[in-house]
Image 1 (tube, rainbow, N blue to C red):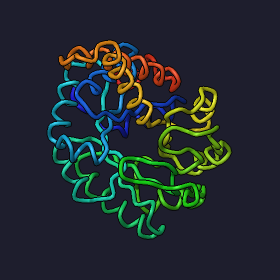
Image 2: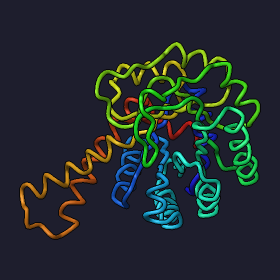
Image 3: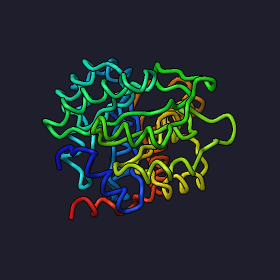
Length: 289
């Protein structure tokens, strides 16, 4: 298969009552791990990269690696640019082959957010690229974006409906009480708000801050209407801890394959667990039929 837009994947997930895992990757091994997890579980997959990773590796390198993975895979795979506020970077990624992008203007006023989102939607629609936007402000740290608790803002359901109508955006990430990074305590998720938003908009909803949410709360988010769950920090920790363990056992190790292989395997297991929570096992067939 080739890379696909995440729009039909997420529309199918929404109608099917399940969620698709979207995993931020920063190395080739991380990318391979989530693809192998999706293949093993026959789950549709969204590979994501942050703006920082795009600047670190280059959008063409990332897109080509994801394309090779998709061509070798039997499951549908989309490639998504996470949390980007720069229109030029978004267009670079689209030209490189990304099939989904996020314009994050949630820090702006409602009207400016609408205008910036609409600009990206108009550019992306011509070639079938999915566009995700955020309404409200999700707290925590995502790449270089830091939103403290004081400035986190939950999304208003009526504003969500109006935003979707005005922009034509394909997927929406409303702030509903989750946070980027690892939670210091129990997440304070507003499940009623998710249901109200889902009842007012027809497009798929995205759950940001999927690292460390307790299993039962993930299931409630999916049942309430979330069709995509972003996971980033938790994967980095799993991957890094596996590498640290190799060096703890053998401080003189200098063969990258000796520490990247166990890191890859650890990440694969973590991704499989997230796919299980999303309810996406075996759902690749929904899109392929």
